[in-house]
Amino acid sequence: METKLKKKIESIMLSHINSLKNEPAFPQECVLSSHLLGGFLKEKAQVVYGTFGEHELFHSWLEIDDVIVDMTAFQFLTPKEKKGFYEKATGKEMVSYIAQNQGSVFITKDSPLYQKYIAIFYPETVFQSKNGMTKFDVYLRQMKKQEYYETLSWRESKDRNGISFSNALEREGKRITRKFVSKWAIVAN
Image 1 (cartoon, helix red, strand yellow):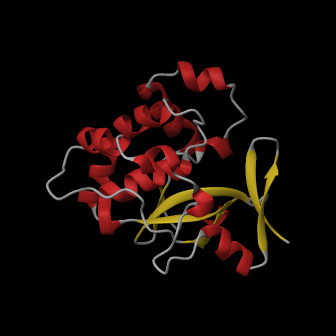
Image 2: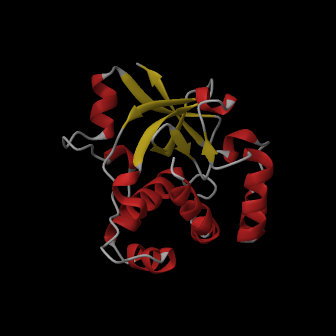
């Protein structure tokens, strides 16, 4: 990944985490996180749906070249925190928490974490940054006004061929199920 792009992502991390932590399902906002960042970075990033870890828990992240960009992997890497922890933590505290528990939002092939990601589906990015939109805060405000922001459903996300994630899973003989109360998993039928 080019240094300029990496610095751009690092520079918007605090704004991005601040926007996510106000969402009702935080820290489980991987789909929203991936679509927002993917839309802002445009063609440089690919949104990915797949699984994380041995329990095949559903997860979403970005791929840029051979690097995984994941702002929410910490939810799988730490003991389950009480929801109050996430609600009370400031954006800066969350960025620090991510650094302590996730190491980096950039997961390279030489990282042991890299092997825990299994890509299944490559949806089109729901949000699109308009030309000239360079400030992430402005982009976030504009995206939050769109209907897609409120109705984003990962099950119905479509790839460039118009195939939904649900249909793609069905074709592969897989299904989505609940595991560990609050986590979704993708398993064989």
